[in-house]
Figure 1 (cartoon, rainbow, N blue to C red):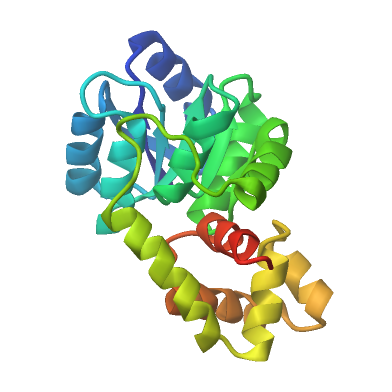
Figure 2 (cartoon, rainbow, N blue to C red; figure 1 turned 90 degrees about the vertical axis):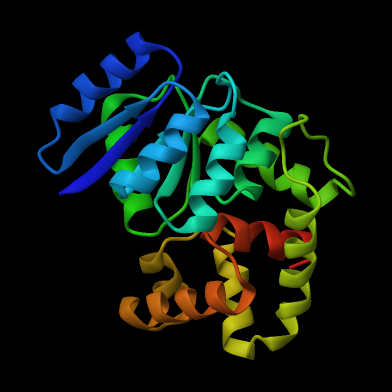
Length: 226
């Protein structure tokens, strides 16, 4: 059973999500939060496998909440929001979210995305994938909302870039295909290795780079010119 925490400031949205997910035999909603501070507290107390996180919420917003939850290792985060572009996508992924979906997503793909994030894979809405890649490749100093990451997060990102030199040749190959958004099965096929070996390589790459998600590793590869 995959446990899920719902974080959205609209009670009707949370009710709708709970109803949709309750139809999935392997998903269980174990908590709800109406703002970022409560989401952090609930994630700490409940340790859900996946937190569905909105971006705009009163008080502590979804970006700041995501950063705290991921940094503490309390849950993986899948952002589910109405906002499609620019700094919200960048801020969420830099904060460590494993995915970014729009609220227009259907129930089936949403449930599948939760399963993939719980399994350690990255999920991006098709509508934002090209913008994310282009934005991170081109941006020298991305625009961010006031609550987005700076300071320690920027220093951590610089440290991850420096750690690229610690990767073996095979791990660099794995990072390159991670940057293409491939799943473990697709990585295995691309590199002619077993899926178990691919999973091991991905875990080692993330550990060496200090990344909390495959999306962060993909961003790092893009920014480094990979």
